[in-house]
Length: 491
Image 1 (spheres, rainbow, N blue to C red):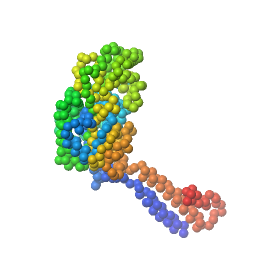
Image 2: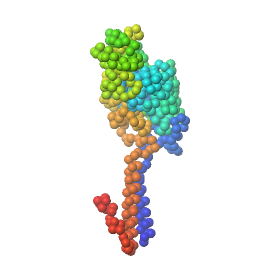
Image 3: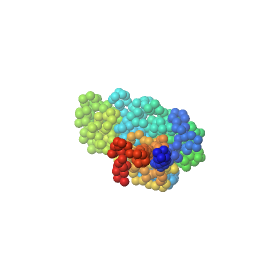
Image 4: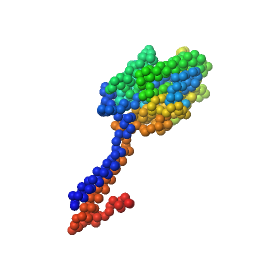
């Protein structure tokens, strides 16, 4: 009798275990099952019949302001919007310059956190200067306060391809993109596209699943011509044609319906005027400070002991100039908590330029101003299997793009300043992909709890039934005969 009861208990255990453990399985395997990609990206076992990873291409047209698409006929941008999503207002990161914002896009961090705080920087700990115009950009120490998405992707078993994206030809945390083109502005857009298409369509396990593509225009023309110039119309049309070329190449390669395409920018552009100049030489001696970063947000490093003197000399000299000590920079700018942010920051109002004197060349357009200004906001459109169709969203923040891309790629994001919840509505209806490995936390925790409940139930059940079938013991603890399970669970 005792053996029969134990066998019956084992049967109950098996049935209950099967019911409770069944939720523990890979979620949405179509999104997360990984093939062995080989090469520099590490691997993940997909095995026979594994499903391809989601594919994502992030494209930045440097300096493409949000309203350029409505200024002239842009059929390819408009087609992208009809087939996917558009965000009207994207608040980018302060300061609105090229290197800080491109790194924010692929890390989800504000500049004060990821460390690329400007196009021109000084690091007091390294005692070195950084400039986008010098080879200092290839020193990994400038970049390693954050981890860009291509590194995260490769650590999770994916493969990445980068065509000229700022920082993508740097060995960050010991990792280059699986495939990348060293920066060379003379390489045509078509050649960059062709290389990316080859990387995406390479036979497994060589194919990349995440790509980044950068193009220097219309930023360069915006600086030289000014965004309000009628000559910019031709530049905008050319960008639209380049987008059309990319889409056609993706179609010819059989990628267009399988790949998620995000088209955005780092910042906008505003018109300058020779009548709106602030000359620092009129107010303070150059001997008192080092000029670190350029207009319109100028970083000054006062000489030892001269901070108060420089600050007092510049405070209130021009109604179009704001002067901040580092600790007084407005918190909403997220631009104070980093050693590379200088002790004094000068911010010009929109359209104004800060110079030491008027001897240098004058640009007709610039960016870098407050990220609250509409003229600084970039374009944002996206299409592909992950996105809704013909959907317009009012606002988002550029740092939200990182968790969105991690979600699409099935990656667990690193800590970031963005929020997937703020951009979840851009995604097509359907289940969310789980993090790498295919298992979510909730089913695993539920299964462990379920197993513990089963074991507890079985122990009490076997004990109670067995004791009832056996002769009473000479000495028996009162607690052993109590219906503990019923009492504890209030059944």
